[in-house]
Length: 145
Image: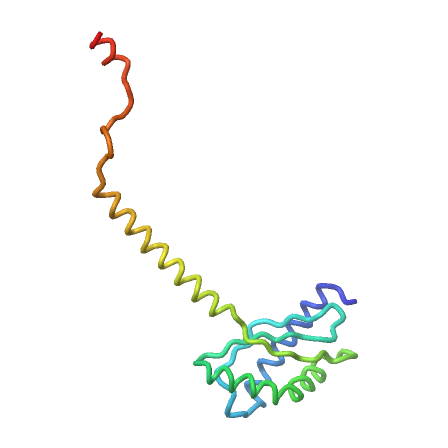
């Protein structure tokens, strides 16, 4: 088992290698505007999960996934050459859900802000249901007696 620091260091190195190789060596027309967002390596350094995002629609995402699957061998061999570790980790590519999740959270926050604005608008024109001051005051009770 490798230390967490070594895992992080290898993950960062793999991220840079994969991004540079995609930019310079992979000429697949299916490959869209892809960004490598994160890499996670298992504690035994045998497997690496590469997370990526693609700018575009679902068709661009599917094409990029197919292009990455076909370029997996080239990318793995490049990682092996540039890292120089004993066992080159296998690469698995996953579409990163962070941008979609962030967009969903932004939509929810916008809806909450609109609902708050509606409540504040209603509160500005609201009147009391009963008396304006529903509490008894001792001075008034003594005057009446």
